[in-house]
Amino acid sequence: MPLVAAPGRRRCVSRDAETARAFLEAAYGSRIELTVLAPGAEPYRLTHTDAGDLAGGDLVLPGRLGFVSGPPARLIVATVRSGSLTVRDGRDEYPLTVGQTFLDGRFGRPLTTRTEDLELRTVAIPWEAVRTAARRAVPGDDRPVRFTGLLPCDAAHATVWERTAEYAHAALLAPDVPASAQVLAESARLLAATALAVFPNTALTAPPEFPPPADCRDTASDTLRRAVAFIDGHADEDIGLADIAAAVPVTPRALQYAFARHADTTPLGYLRRVRLAHVHEELRAAAPGDGLSVSRIAARWGFAHAGRFAAAYRQAYGCSPSQTFRATG
Image 1 (cartoon, helix red, strand yellow):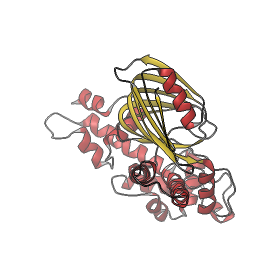
Image 2 (cartoon, one colour):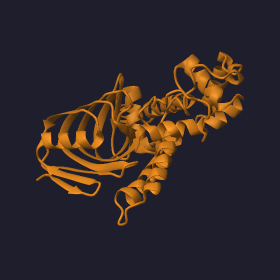
Image 3 (tube, helix red, strand yellow):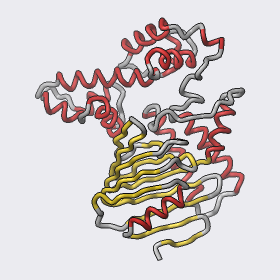
Image 4 (tube, one colour):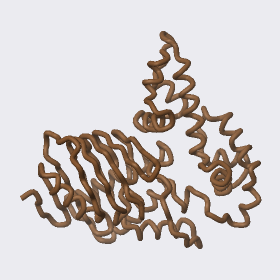
């Protein structure tokens, strides 16, 4: 039998794609279509632990596979441990590789995914815990919370999630001594609050559709011009949302609103775009013997994680940074 039962934990070791698909569908509570594009040499190895308020697992998916998945029953956050995948979310496409963390689906949104020799670690949080965390973070704001992107706001936020998720797996989902219901509930609240802090969403990292009157005076296009000028002049420094807002000066929330209204992006999204443009120009200008490398140029502009940088660069310029570097070197 490919399925081995244990208290709260299920395992599947099978070479049959339909068995793996059924396991994933039951574990994550969403409709899944699976297509084998190229079979792998090893069997599928899937583990899922459901502790009620918290769930998660490890997935080993050899070969090249295609998935179409319906909206998830919980908020699922996944980290790539080996291999690679490409996620298509509406018009957005995310090429992901080792070390990258992403939302494996958003409420009400299906996903199309292509994987290659993928090993994935997941954490699943009830949507109600996310909604409760949003209400606590922004008292009086009863709007439904939505995640507006699948990737963390930046590398520092991604590290925060990775450390929190590792704790959840080590102490709660694979412990020698089972955690109490109270510990699990508190941990689910912690993970929900962390997800809201890490991934762009309408509760904390995006402006409201109609800003409060106190912020309206700060949302003219002049706010955007001052913020853009500051970012353009300080993109090589360690700046964040609070620094940009203080330089304008406006509230961080007003700054978010100004960028959303006048530039259809976020302040940190614009900062990332500026830094990528500088990297692109330096890669194009690099000459043999100057001692530069892709990693050194990327680090100069604040990109410390090679995988996330490469994915963002490819999305912006349609090729890898090493291809640009070789074409001009």
